[in-house]
Length: 281
Image (cartoon, rainbow, N blue to C red; front, top):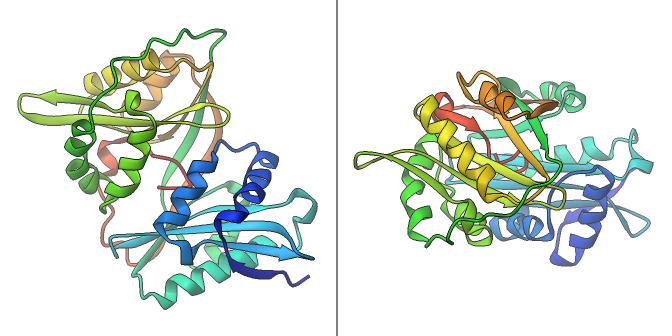
């Protein structure tokens, strides 16, 4: 089977939503629009008989590295090479841009394919889920955009590249989830969050100490009114997994952060409690 691969457009968002619902993922239509705003030429769909059967997205961060995400295939067409064809097409596109490094978060099912394409592991991530019987919404007062501006410099250091446009969009959609912590005049931690289709999602979650990490987590849980919360936690973080266990989060699935090329900007994973999400990095 040889699918037709073309650039994704706004008109393909309903098809993307159909595929992500079949996979029981948490993205929204606005997330798809974020991919297209970030790099409309780097997002692709695979068609068969005029119907979208697969997707892949890419984002280039500050010409330092690119991110690959949303590798989705219609359940009825899996095992026919569509995902592999999309991934190779995306990698060819990125290679043509001369970007020095490509990163992604791999599921166990996809890790072998990525390794065959030259990706190597960087560190492990785990999705943890909190299911609350009931959660009363108690949002803090809506914060001004100055809060997100205060985290952008630290996020560049922690993530490894500037992603101010993406984070500003996330903060604008859920300003109640912009959480910062100060020690004196210095920023000691921050978090953002998204209201996904299935759950509120905490991330990125960054902290310089266990006390700061705990404070940010508790404030996020206070702000969220959803019964279900997702966190993609860095497995080797010295305090975040234990803090989630205290709050009765349960392990859901593993992910492996991988890279190909020259990982010259690894960021500060030692400060990273949880990532923004496997689709964004």
